[in-house]
Image (cartoon, rainbow over all chains, first blue to last red; front, side, top):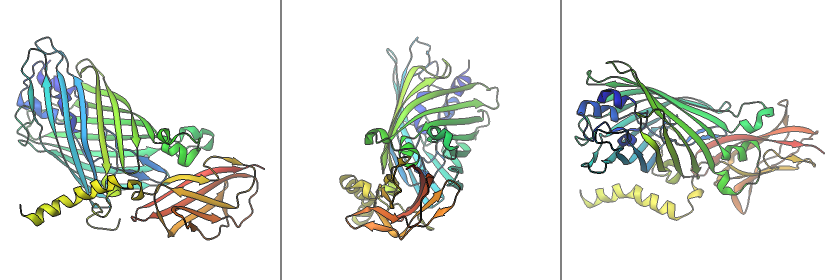
Length: 320
Length: 127
């Protein structure tokens, strides 16, 4: 398997999580292949459609736009077997800031620091390329709990360290959607807290020797806040009423240049949703052995700035 | 970087820190926290009012409560009013007559930080 193919096993994820996937059979990867380690990222959001709050998910971005801050986002996993017989430890610590320009348009910027270490091998450390993003919410239906957005994520080539950032850029137009199940019939009331969100992005490489990559992603979530506020209040302790169990499935497949291999992870976890912030933690299970070795962990703290400090983080223009 | 620029750049950070240190829940989207009758409950007496507590303070002048039967017929309600001791609670008297059956409460509110939210929840009147 070539480095390129190896890297295509990497799931769709926010670029800030790319350290997991900046791995190959050695800890030093070819720059051309490293580009693929910088996967699409975009603005997480405090997404509201009627009764439904779509939380900010860790790997598959939600469909809304908001002023918000993700800091820190931490992920760890062991890479596939390298040439020295090790499963290298990959750690990423990153952050992301998004700002509402209008009530429907947000711009974002993110970066992260990566490390890869393995017993008896020289560790590799450094920043990944900066990513900038824009996302526009073009459809909202409160009655049916639907949100749809479109955005562009740009991985800016040459802005990261040579170990983790490629010299050329990638451009990822992405479609985002969310659908709550609150319009199910009352006979299925306990299913109403379910929601799905998803993304579909095509990562277009500026360096045409690298493959373009399709990034489909989907989440399934069950909202305890929704159960309490819109279906039935079971008078559970407040802690449980703030939990949203979630499964994220970020995937990726190469589209050209001889790379057509699927990869990804399945990430079960839970989100604790406060009024102005949330904390999320997930396991990361590889779809194939080439994705990673064993179970990884992702966690992040996320602040809804337009709720926490509305005076500073209103949309720059347009009504709220 | 001059001093005034440093202050300007630090302002949002300071504001965030102050917000975390104070009552953060007082400035956010207003979502339903509790209701009377309770969300999804079965009540044996027809409620004389609908009361909703939100996760943050609201502007009652721009907030509403409506009540509908299962077939979509609107039940007459009086004016919404704020709980004088708690700006997160608003209520409206039910002035129409309730027959036994399922009902849906629909609400929309403007929070004090000007975020608009809306939602709905069911209850059943079963004497």
